[in-house]
Image (cartoon, rainbow, N blue to C red; front, side, top):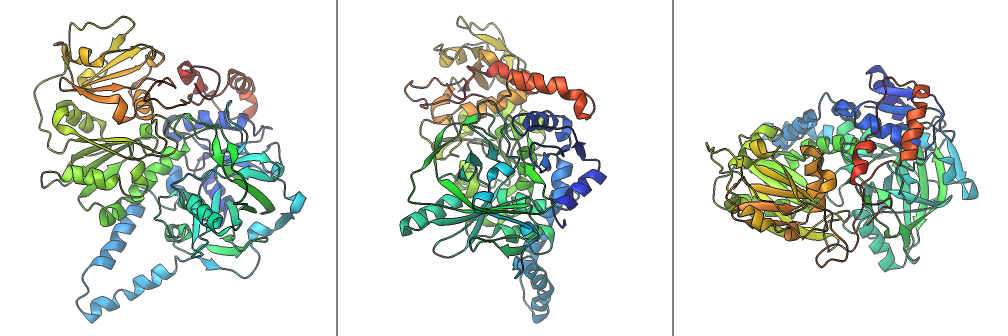
Length: 608
């Protein structure tokens, strides 16, 4: 694997996966706008290295934002290779050992596993070539990005936040965004379900300050491991060692006792005062494609900043999909398939989480179904396990299904009987989910397609009477058996009356805001998954599924108290980048993706 981030950058360069930009650029809006244009290019575009920023440090973005680059980052030809390694490892470990010879064959494997464990060094690290403490440890020295027009400030977006369990000393490495409050403090955005938050609660109960060290950069395997859905108390640097096939070398921080990777680019050391009142953090244009709104989170105090002399500042830009995080999720679903089979659901054959679902909202699973109720068992099990507990919509298909083939999924949906296929539930949501009226908790729905048989019937729409102010599109009827309706979100539309009409010969009716009428299927799926809570917005009428995917008006009974806007650049930022395009020297002009999505805005603020 890579000696450091600079080694990875050189690999990107030689693979034709990097664009260098020597033109002076601002870390406020400009880098994010250029990155968004590149990330939404076919296949994820290229990684961008901004060599002339408004600080002394270059900025690297979109470094894992394609299937090719995430594979390069993890040192494989394709991410399935890692899944194959895990399958082979589990097969060796779990196979019967009936003879002494069989047991002795395990010794080389044990030796290999021993190489993955992190190792502590007794010297200072490459990440400590420059040491700044006290007032000199100013966050203003770093090119921390402000990405979107309604963001509450600048945010560190690829931090590896290292914390220790106050009772056991076990390390956790999580990725929690950090809003810059001033030159020496940030927010620490760990959600209530995350390990960092559990550690914080422990220190608070003990009445102690919480040491925290934030590593940035280094081998990209570290960054990936910090995003991975590892079980609680399982060391993320062990996963990084497995991916690298060699141990992560750790060095002790200067002002606390936390160990961080020797070769990372920056380390921000400090603490959270657990006796201190929580601070207002946000708004932030998030990976859901919507703003996560202001809320209360702990305040992180900086005691030291250390860095390499040749440090590069890596950052990610999140927002309306697809972005870099979509490709990280693709790798995760493939890498963790084998452990899911082993620990949770052995009947699962394959799994994918479509980009439109922004990681948690949608999952498609193929499974070996042998008995009545097995699909419900799988759905309930997935909704109770690890980060899959955040899933909202689950599609269960036969084991022969290629889950990434939209034609096969469409045929199953087209031929299913919704009345017999729907499995409902309730449970934990990601705190970022904005559709639920009860933060962190909501409805769940699975569609059991494991016993669907092919039908000769074709979906048809004819002679439908629509209420005033409602328009329709039949673009998805033939393939998906979905009728699209569009109306202002203030209109009270009786979807049951529409579903009952004889001319509605399809399985689903989906109602969207009029502003979304020109959008294609992928964007409509993203909007529908994000804007709905199955408890409130999904119903069965006349044997058809009805979906109200419109923006929810705050204050109406059953709706969330606040509803966020979609994430886009401002016209001023778009125009400024357009004017400077030739200066960047990065090839053919790419229009801003925000021009497409700004029509979804309901005002110029982050929320309704």
